[in-house]
Image 1 (cartoon, rainbow, N blue to C red):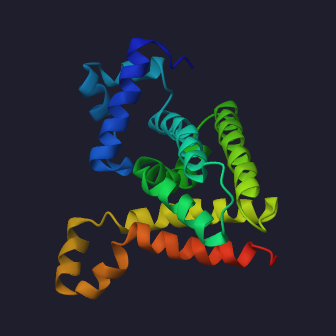
Image 2: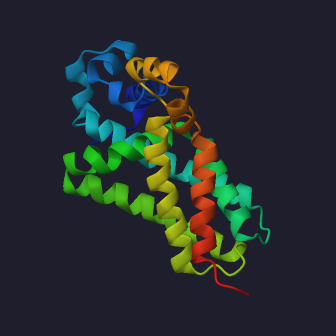
Length: 207
């Protein structure tokens, strides 16, 4: 399915803007095509479904995470806590990626053709492996298994915590009534950092 060309790029841009503004779950083909002045049926020339369109966005976010993580590591030798802080910071800077990760596992990967899912997995694995190698090089006492555990925990926690940090109007009203619940739900970066520090300490070998 061709994604290149001005129309394909415009559709991806519109989907990205909607996802950032409203959240991934609110992105519809009607809204996407309306933003670029196309009939919804025209999207089928570029993407077979909403799921494929969003999976394309997710695939393009992986190199962004990789580059931010590697830039944060900066070629330094870091303690377990410092590694966790860098990983958390790299995800905090990519809210769309965190949002998409929730949906990739729940619906996007399983709703596209085999070859499309394979292409996504290949691209994601390439970035994941590069980040694993970078963490091993940077982290004191960190091996490949430990690095993979940190990254897996980071993806899982970020996907969950991001959804908590973007409450619906109903939940916002509830949090106004019970501020303690809001304090627990809305601290995305702080909670992600705390969890990843615990994971990083747990997988780091004693010198």
